[in-house]
Length: 248
Image 1 (tube, rainbow, N blue to C red):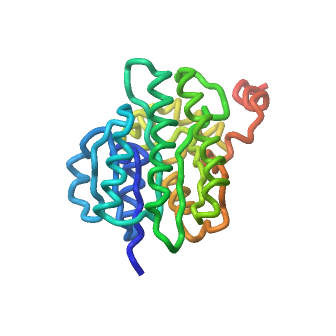
Image 2 (cartoon, one colour):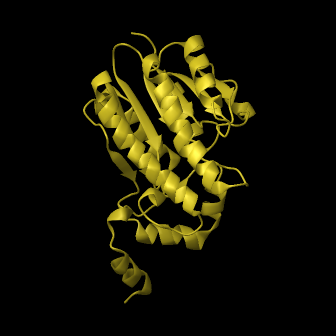
């Protein structure tokens, strides 16, 4: 059996980077598109290869993605974990990076999926796709809500081609870039243990496992879903949560 080939868009930091490492450890061939060069510790992984593209440039992502397929062969899985990191027009930037680039890459790569075997697309979303929260502008909320709609749209329209499409929505989680901040903030860590039904913060590995499941034959009849990886927090009614925290 040929080695599965996964392309991760946005895989040089955070969740995308953790996913690339995990899939490589499971024996997959992993191709990564990122806006910047990978960390030096990532360049020695023989099954992972990186390409650089700025998704703010209209056709950069599609051109690089097609070059990857030409070099490394058809895809089994495609994962979108990118986000806009610019400092200019966050509205236009979010629409371009989160929505337009995702749409263009998907439609450009549909013919490049393997003719047989399991095939899937996973899109990393955010709780701000369904809820309104502080710290992120309107464009970020719009981008994540749009991603959820794209996942449903392509689940219906690519299903006959044997390509499943799902979204994954993580809650705030520990990753390499933020672990020191959260573990060093005892009060904040205690708050998460208090409010999350499972009694802990999530980790990058929790979301990696969810994505790896959706991008596997084990999820062969799961299509068009948005899987929350939040320890059950989204099920808690805000009033009940406020009363609990205020000990009323």
